[in-house]
Length: 241
Image 1 (cartoon, rainbow, N blue to C red):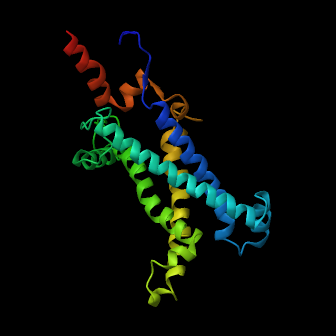
Image 2: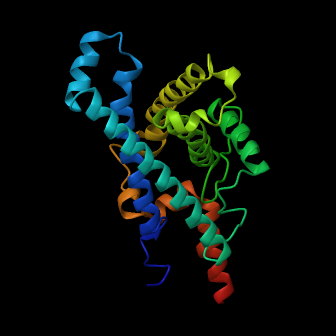
Image 3: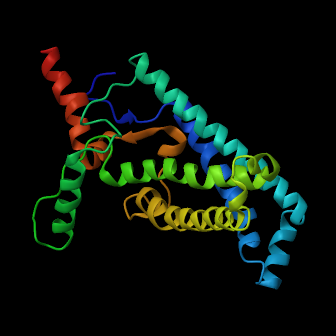
């Protein structure tokens, strides 16, 4: 199909979409089963909510299975990235890379100036804006803090061999706070940052279908990712000539 009549652009492939579905499914399970554990002092809420998941023991099993599944999915994603880079299926180009660049800082400043009416020109984004990059790399931070601390809490006997004897009086309290507070931060971040930017903005409400189809319209691509559009269509068109 020629570029002139093409109406959609394949933004994410099937493997990437499956990884995303596993990620958000396990995230929701972890959030739902973990909230009652974080606030047990809210007696009526905790008892009712944990009962939905079959009681504390069953909810704990679901929480652990979801956590391990999420870590496996994350590992799969990292290995997939490495494979894509080493085989040349994914190329690091400034207009398509997810790696943070100095341009992202200038885009943020330029966007703030535009929002406050101090600039008439919006920044031009490639495949990923600074918002997408912050969204993406926050997962790596969360996996390091929540995932590692979660493994320690799920397997305390094995984890205890890693800690010196002099930390025994406080290390588990620190790990518990790290796990629960970082998880709460992740939930708030997803609700107010990711959901809004990807689904609840006026031009995408009530939901963007990209996570299902992997595609966006060419018009949306021109509007949100003009540098990538130029790279994929206009520059290639010039090369064909």
